[in-house]
Length: 324
Image 1 (tube, rainbow, N blue to C red):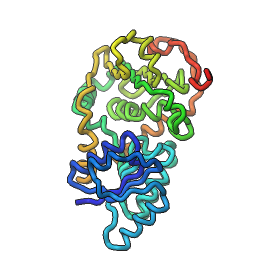
Image 2: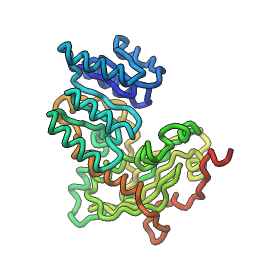
Image 3: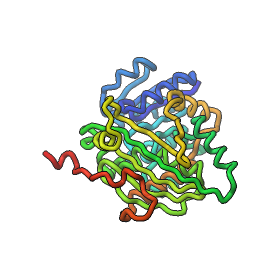
Image 4: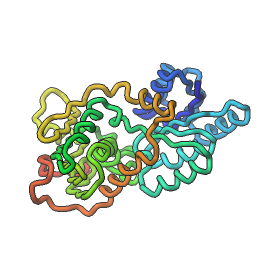
């Protein structure tokens, strides 16, 4: 049985990590979050020590190590801009680290963490669950079996509606979240690179507070992509009247790749692989970090030619706080 500590216990994704720790027959010993709205812990590890101050959490983890009961893994579910610091904390406390997406915001942070891995002998693992989805694994095999010179036409659309709270939180601050492409798109860019190969061109048309849109030319694909957190985009694009607030679609050569099902157990499967020494590492995560960093820093290109997403021409909207 491995002993875990969790940083970011009040976040949405933390529940998946608690469940994964439980379902892999391990134990959560300590958890940290500035917010004390963490009653969900009772459903999994009611005896876990909980802290709202990092200093006390740090002292407790150190005390466990000195008493001969060290933490084996630190799971990081904190805001994106804190991942680097919290990963370093775990490594320097002689623990392996499991970090949510994106593992860091900047490519050079990967290099720094590799150095600490070498110094400590501990590893950093990240959650790249789309690589474990059976439908996407089958798509990867299909692409690998295609003729070498085959270049697929791909459309990616992901709209996941968020309320006004999003803009007031750290997620609405590009310096803290990395922006739309990083915060909600990182898994998709990792999946695209994993399946279709290296990036030949990375063109960005739109990158605002509520949407991002661009074109990726990969070794084996031309990808038009569109991401948004704005419900009005979903309503305008699809005239939905059933209250649906999320839309996810990937088409390859015009054929829909349906992978909406099967997400429930992917964090647990990720943990199982990590505990077996087969988890996704910094090297696996690095290329997607480079892609979203390039998107974040790119100079926008005007829409032209045939290769842009059909939703790219929807009218842009002001930041919701600008209306007040």
